[in-house]
Image (cartoon, rainbow, N blue to C red; front, side, top):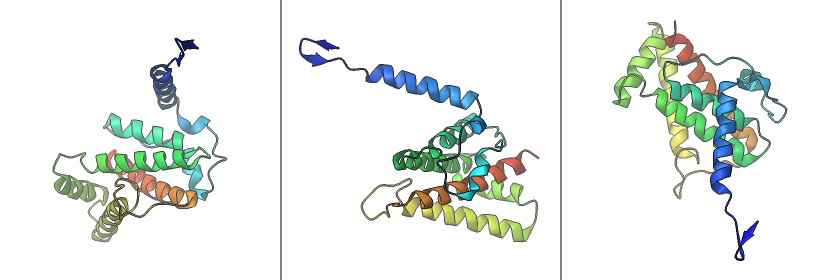
Length: 173
């Protein structure tokens, strides 16, 4: 459609459509979607119902990331990785804005007073935080490591989704 030699800009309508589709996908669980574009054997985790957090933003980001990770497009998988990493960062502040105190409390709760489990979960939080700061996941400055492989994106995605799911599950008990 043209008007005086220029094309009509459909971007606002397309953005509304995108938001409507994402809202539908969030309300209707991702279990009904296909995992055929996922190479990682952890793809069955997408079919499992992720425990619900008390934080609705965490729930929405998880479901939205599941939509993107199922794509065969690298850019979509990258978006999934970024969204699940945003979820991880949000989880770190679930017990307050002071991230270090909140993470300490979270780890105490999910480790169920086991010093061995506490050490393991603490190391996992530290390592995943370092990964997020090293690779093109949360930061895109020069000097950050790009991710060239969808297999590696999926590996990181399922690794962090597993930690998030574990934490939410333990918090709910």
